[in-house]
Length: 324
Ligand SMILES: Cc1cc2nc3c(=O)[nH]c(=O)nc-3n(C[C@H](O)[C@H](O)[C@H](O)COP(=O)(O)O)c2cc1C
View 1 (tube, rainbow, N blue to C red):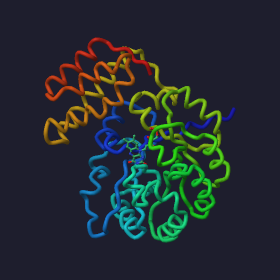
View 2 (spheres, rainbow, N blue to C red):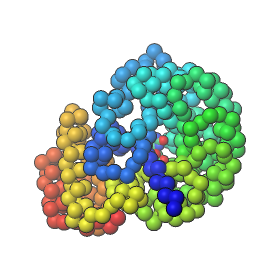
View 3 (cartoon, protein in one colour):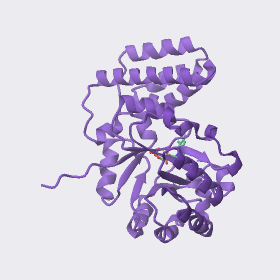
C-alpha cells in the first residue's frame, strides 16, 4: 500500500514573536514543523545593507533545526536583488517575497499587500528580479489589498515565472487579521495556478487542519501562525506525534517558558525589555489555558521581574488545565 505523504508544515513569520530566539528555543522543545519563514526584513538603499540588518537570520545565532527561509519586504527590484545576494552569501538559497503585509503605512507605500492592487508593478519587479538572483523565490500573498478579486487576477501573472510556491493567506490587507478567511476565493486561486500552493490562515486546532485538508487536497503545505504560538504542540498533533498527558504537557511548556526567559535575558538589555517580550508571548500563550486570562492580567500588571517569575511559577505549579 502506498504510504500517505507527510504534510509539510511551515512556521509562519510573526514579526516580534517568531524571531531567532523563539525559533531556536522552540525547536529544542517541540517537533512538527518542517520549515519556517523568518519575519520580514525590509529592503533598503543598497549602501545600507550590512550584517546588522540580518541579525535575526545570522546562521551562528539560528539553531532552528529545520529549513529557514528569510523574507524580504520590498517594491524595489534592485534593492531586492542586492539583499537576496547578501542572504545567499549567508547560506540561504531560498527567499520569500512579502506581498501580504497589511499595515496601513506599508500599504500606503505600495509595499506588502499594497502591491497586490498593482499587477504591472509586480510583473516588472519579477521581470527584473527572476533572472538576476541566485536563489529560489516564493511569494506570500493575501487575496488582495482592499478587493478580494485581486489575487485571482494575479495568478496567471505568477504562472509566467519559475516561483517555488505561493503561500496564500485568504484575507485582504484591509481585513488585517480579523474577519473570516475566504475559502471560496482561495479555492478559485488554487484551481487556476500551475504553482504549488501553501495554505495559511486560522489553523488553530487539529480539527480545523483536518477539515481544511479535506477541502483542499491539492495544497502542498500548511502554514501555522498564531495557532502554533498559542498551542506549541499543534504541529506535533498534526503529525500524529503528540501523546503526552495534560500534566506532562504543562511541565514541558513551563520548561520552554523558562528557557525562552533565560534566552531573552541574554539577548536583551534592560529588564523592562525582557518583560515586554514575555508579555507579548503571553498574549498568545494564555489562550491555551482554562481561565488563562487571569494569569495574563497579572502578568500585564507586573513591572518587576521577580514578581513576574513568582506569578508564573505559582501558575504552573498549581497545575493549570490546557484547553487546546
Ligand atoms: C504580530 C504579527 C506579525 C506578523 N509578521 C509577519 C511578517 O513579518 N511577515 C509575514 O509574511 N506575515 C506576518 N504576519 C502574518 C502571519 O504570518 C500569518 O500570515 C497570519 O497571522 C495568518 O496566519 P494565522 O491565522 O495562522 O496566524 C504577522 C502576523 C502577526 C499577527
